[in-house]
Image (cartoon, rainbow over all chains, first blue to last red; front, side):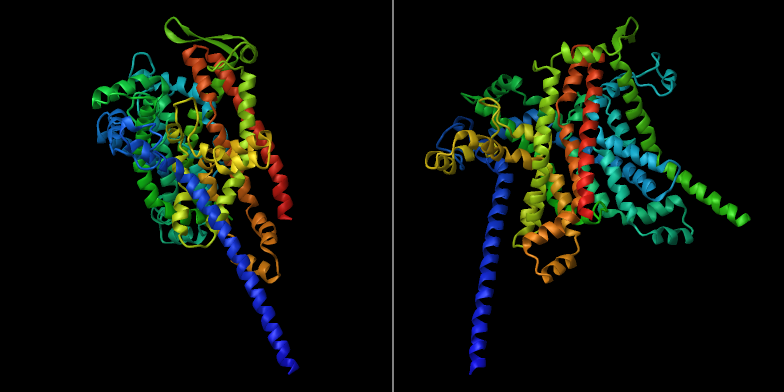
Amino acid sequence: MKNKKQQTNMDAGLAIYLFKNKAKHAVVRFFTLVLIMGLSFTIIYPILSLVPVVFSSVEDLGNPNVIWIPLDFSTVSFKAATRMIMPEGIMTMVKSVLYAVGIMVLQVFFSAMVGYSLARVNFWGRRLVFGMVILVFLLPRQSLLLAQYISFVHFDVLGIMNLFTKAGEVNLINNPIVLVLLAVFGFGVNQSLFIFLFSQFFKNIPKELEEASLIDGCGFYRTYFRIMLPNAVPIISTVGILSFVWNYGDVYYTNYFNPQGSYMSTLLSSTFISANKDYILNALQTWYDVPVATDLAFDAVKQAGALVFLIPLLIVYLIGQRKLVENMENSGLVG
Amino acid sequence: MKKGRKKISFRTMWKIHGLIFASPFLIGFVAFFLLPLIHTLYYSFNKVGVGDQGGMTFEWVGIQNYIDLFTAEVTTTNTTMARLFTEENSTMLLSLPLIVIFSLFMALLANQKFKGRAIVRLLFFLPIILGIDVVMDMLTITTGGTTLDTGSSLLSGSYVTIFLVRTLNVPMRVLYPIMTYVENIFDLISQAGVQTLVYLTALQSISPSLYEVAKMEGATAYETFWKVTIPSIMNITFFVVIYTIVDLFLKSSIAEEAYAFAFTQGKIGIGSALSIVYVGNVILVLAVAALLLRKVVKKNEK
């Protein structure tokens, strides 16, 4: 009898405890969900808020009655934006993407090589070279801009340019070869970071792989290209995605070293400056028979341009995003 | 004997191959880093002019360029150099802890298990794209000054604020700084993309058995966070902080100023002096951050 009573008491206690636990969990869950949703909203709000702006007709802009759904659907802003930032039509975008892909391939190829030898080959002065990579990463690229710029204006390697030109130097500014040179020699966009990531990755690959391939008679290069590179796919794709995104969106190198090249990023940043406002509004009025174009129209066109610019990036991001998280785990940066 | 010799030569060959692999970077280091650095240093002590036959002329002026930089010269926006540097540094020091903590916070959230996690992660890493300078510039609204419409008006005009001010009589003096931070939250998030990614991977690499042990020992979630999670990610925090500092310095406007000095005003010497001062500034901040962090990391490792 007594035993039974105790049992029920215990059951009740357990039930209360379990309920409390559940309630606590539910509350915590609720708050995390609210936080997550809030943050997600904050992140996409700037993009969402563009929709009513870029899709409404120019006359409707600034209409206080329009919050989310435009009254008159129109794509004038888009047409104007594409006409301005893509002077050669879709080819401009294709060229920009190809440029970013090309630089990306160079960056990945050469960073991987340097990273591998830093991680796996104990050559003379390896620690020093590693220190150099870190140093390059730490010092902002702007600080050397002047001297780099001048050295490209008077480009000359150990006097060999005397053979080709009379002045003994060539002006490489506005020549896309500068950007290729920078990527090959490890000084493209954030390339020291890539070298660092590669070397961290290669450090964690088991030594046995190398040894096995050596015993099977592979030399240094075959070991690298046949064994190590195929094993490095995770880090290659991580670095590849980051490199593509940063190169496509780069305005620093393209603007200073190749200002006349028609990259979408530089076109975007040079077209839509406030000084150009009147020109853009005029263009809008004459091209599309818009009676009044206010400052709001300038913003609409500008943001439409930004959206067009983002398209390739968003595609790459949607494809690569999931891999990015998985791959970073294997990148060797952590742990 | 012969065998041993062969082994050494093989090792040497291996080293030579390694050096060949590293050589692109070494060449680049000399051509695009070391020489420019020396040149910049040299220019900064000279008055650089254009010679009669093209070419450049140098006239040694000692540290006159540095003195001019801080006394006579002004930036393109007409502020003094000292002010430019204080502003750059103070904004950086303010946003640094916020970005680091924020990225950790986002990573912690993204690491939770819940339905629709894939979509949330998709959104959380969007700043990697949206944070690119061009995109940020383009998303800003230029009409009516330089206001940034990234959820800005959401708080100041919201009922919460009105309630706080009208009913609870919270003085605007207290509310205003908080409001500016909340309103610039997108600015923060947009710079935290890569950091969040790094933190998330660090969190995922913590062994689940550690959490199991903590649970068995009856640790609360709060204790687990401070005793298990934080020490495990301390090393990666070092990396995140350094990365954030570098990233913030990359976005500073010094480059444009130096470029303007050198090529619009033709004062290459002054521009170089500015670059050198800038390098010194970066090194100083990084050194202080690294020293402080090393202490914290060591403490946590014990």
